[in-house]
Length: 185
Length: 239
Image 1 (cartoon, rainbow over the protein chains, first blue to last red):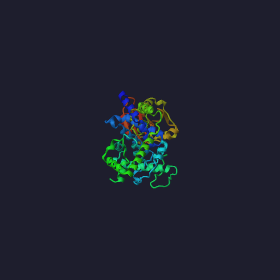
Image 2: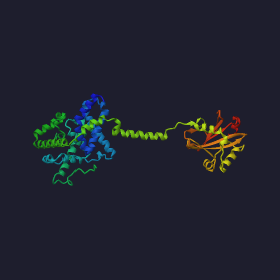
Image 3: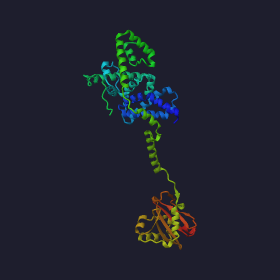
Image 4: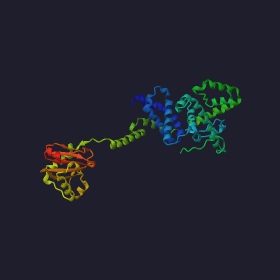
């Protein structure tokens, strides 16, 4: 293994592995699968990364690869969300008190994210990567920028709805457009 | 741009992003400055975004993951799980190829089996079989009208009833001696399934050999070899 390539690989791991793991964790819902997805992503980079001429796009490449690997695993497990069947949710999302959101720990927020339709969850997670532009998010998800925007908007609305339902005194069974529970087991 | 359109745009606004200065954001932000209700909504929205990001960043990354990633990269490719599937595919393809791949085939006349029966035919005094089946087959072979290439002997019955049975390479080879035109002939029968690499046509073919003529042919189930010192012209008339 050439020393330069090793150094570049190490730098790439150091720069992105935590963000990739968190993205994977929120997609896959468990640490073991997230670790495997992250590892698989870097292994693919080790084998094919040299083909990427614009090294500035390495982060987008890594997120795209991880997301594709996640979707591939989902397809193999026969758990693909039928995106076209999702109900549109264009109505004004319910307001959730920010104090309540601030009181949530990472686990609670991750659980809430898991209840969001997968098609909306991925843009929401990429949204948290502040240095990824919408154009890059669109490349990761392989959809137009406008689609990223609309899915992000709906994802936030669904997250608010879920949080509203999980709030003490919240009613999961009520409320229009409530996200149905999904079987991710 | 109305308030609803401004909200739609501002939901994706990230002040620290490279797109923050895009024209549609600038226009929507301009409305925030003049609309108190929109400003209150926008502040809540931005706070929600910050909490969402903070929540994501709270997800604990497992200790040792970095080392695992760096170690995995230096692992040989054949030890990576992705390659196990490739290896398994090769094993399956190899197994299929072993079944369907054409095996090298060899003419009976040039085979070790032919050499074996030629050597055996040099020692006729050691030959001898018994049993009704063999006697009937031998009687048929002796008939002057019998064409050797038309015979369909019953291999299992011959062997069970006492026909001379040799072993070549662990497989049974039957032998029946008889005379035609005053010369000795040795009729050998082997199962094709015991010698799958050997090929012969259905029409008897005479092959000259210093140790005697060989006549070779086969049907669906059996290989036949006749060894004799009979002159070739006479031999061909028996076929």
